[in-house]
Amino acid sequence: MSGTSALYQEIILDHNRAPRNFRRLENADRTAEGYNPLCGDQFTVFVKLDGDRVADVSFLGKGCAISMAAGSLMTTLIKGRKKSEAAELMDLFQRLVTGQTGAGGSVPPQLAPFNGVSGFPERVKCATLPWHALKAALESRSEPVSTE
Ligand code: ZN
Figure 1 (cartoon, rainbow, N blue to C red):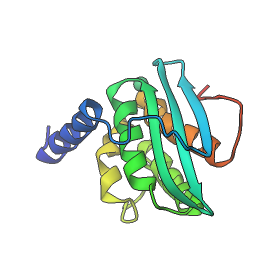
Figure 2: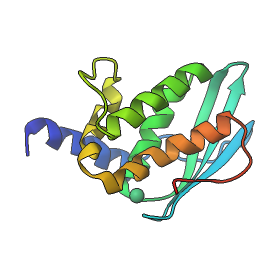
Figure 3: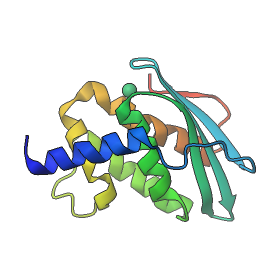
Figure 4: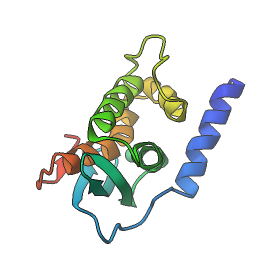
């Protein structure tokens, strides 16, 4: 294992051990649930909007290290962003974990640890689940989302 991937693995494990924004958002405008039946990951994402901006975002639930870390990093990255920026980041993340980014110059460094997920197709749904739930929350869909 290279030094970089060891570092990336450490970042993911750290977010899994101590997920950021892992709480219920009492004054949330939007909530959405996501479920990945392949792995058993299950999360609720809470969003507090301020106009077009994500004023606050949090998540709760249970899942594997990849899904926990993905949710944790997602909340730190999305907080304070416009909804359109959140959608762009989700798109970037989706391409990153499915190995579709070229140079990857536009990928925020915080997401780089997930680059390795593209080598594990069965983990892609774990990584994208919190993002799917976020998208559902931002689009105000009331049906729970599933990766299936
Ligand atoms: Zn998982």
